[in-house]
Length: 144
Image (cartoon, rainbow, N blue to C red; front, side, top):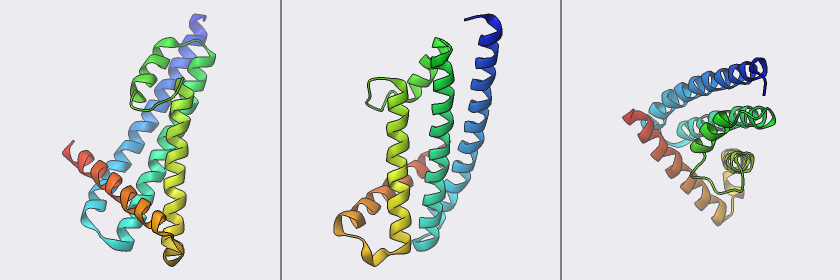
């Protein structure tokens, strides 16, 4: 890869990381509120937290595609470290698995907030687990 192209890819990556940091700041702000509120207000905050998380993964997906397509292997390695906890054959698959999972959480959350009585036992149980998952993340964010 030529130097000019490498600089462009690095610039795109830096911009994506700056946006991710801004998203993480929003998530930290929301996490404090999640810990303070209960019931409907908390569910709205959990949904917002997950939507920011999805935005983060989508940005990192774009950065990964650009890096891979341009042979910026250092960037690919950096991104791969962020997704080392996710199973998948390659970086793009790992990121998209995270996106799909968060999208499923958001979809179920929206359904639960709109039509709570329509939820099956399994869906209600899944919502409890999503809440526990986000609450644990909120606690971690507030330790930072």
